[in-house]
Every structure is written in C-alpha cells, then in structure tokens.
Image (cartoon, rainbow, N blue to C red; front, side, top):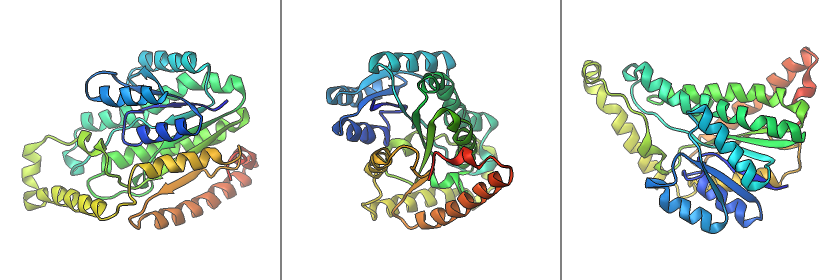
Length: 289
C-alpha cells in the first residue's frame, strides 16, 4: 500500500508534497478545514490531480475523528500519515496573551495529538506504518519574536520523541522534518499579539519585530533554493528509503542555519541512544537510522 493522509494539504508544504506524491503513484487524501473560501481553488487543483479531500478541523476532536475515518474510507486505508497542519505566531513574547498561546498550541500540539488518536488504531491494527511531522528549525532553537511558535514546535518534538519509541513495537516508524523559513502564505496567517498598552512600554524596540520580519523576507527573496518544493522533495526522498532505516530528523534549509541544527541533532541522536541503552531499552530506537 502507498496510501497517504496529509493534514493541512492546501497549505504551503501540503500542496507541493501531495502533487509530488501523486506524480509518483501514491494515493493521497488530505484535510482542509473547509473546501470553500480561500481553499476552493487549491482543493479543485488537488482533486483534478487525483487527491481525495476531507474536511477536518484539527482543533475539534469530533471533526478529526470523522475526517480520519473519511480518509480511511476513501483510500481504503492508509499506511503513511503526514502531520503537516500548523499555524505560526510572531511578536514580542510578553505581548502574547495566554489566549494567543493557547490558539497556537491547540493546532500545533493538541491538533497533532487529536490526529494521532484518530489514526493510530488503524495503523496499529495493520502492524506497520510511517508517520511524518512538520516541525521547524526553531523547534530546535529559539529566535527572538518566535517564542510561542518555537515553544509549540519544541513541545511537538518532545511528543514525537515519545511516539518514536512507544510506537516502534507496533512497526510504526517516525520522521520529523525541520524546515527553515519558507516563502509561503503561512506568514499571512500568523497569530500576533494585540496589546497596545504593553507594546507602548517597549518604546522604540516595539518596531524591531517588523524590521526583523522585513529582513527575513529579503533573505528569502535572495535565496531561490529556499522554496516549499524542497519539503516535498524531502518527503519523497524519505518515503523512497527502505522501511526502518529512515533518519528520525531531516533538516531542510538553504540559508545557512541548517548545518548548525544538523550538528545539534547529531549530538542529541547519540545522547538519546546512550541514555536508552543505559536503561536497556535501546531497541525502541530500532526503526530509525
């Protein structure tokens, strides 16, 4: 079986990944919160290419259960899950309200958990599967003004570390994809703070986030390789690898940050294996290189 469910299929990473997999003969289903509105043109394009589209809101457990069941029905089952739905945030951390932070975590962390709880009974019953996750380079480090987003991706990385080990006994392998910043509509839908009184207390520094964002935009314009299609290529490359030998983490970045994150990941890889070996449970890592 080469059947894939992609959450957030209409997004900047979801669409090129779906099209790349369809071109290679995969059967693909993907979720959108709504088929209409801003997603209508993308949904039509994906369906014309052969994708099955299900409506699913990952912030709602009932909707998620129904959407995953719909995907299973339309595909006749799936053996690959790509947890790709996500939301960004940007701004001075103090200005972020708890409600702002909860909104981000509800999609990036609890949303993944809802999808996993809906999908894992199916994958466990099969006794084999592959689960991929979209994380971020700043799910490994934290940079100014991305504190809430980074925190959500750090939390995701921790959860996936546990899924990696706990699902290995069921023949389910785990792969995290860590992109750098990419020029997608993701930036248009970011959660931003709305606390003018506190912002005023920051004085001239309050203008720095906008300046930093503009600088990033210029870097992306000057780096044509930094495109969402690179994520699609990374997913295809991972799925082309034999079962059980895929790397746990894959960095996708062309602006110079990637090599530092890879160095960090290599150290953590060894630390994790050493610790689990000391506890006599290193076999829980056997489904990744």
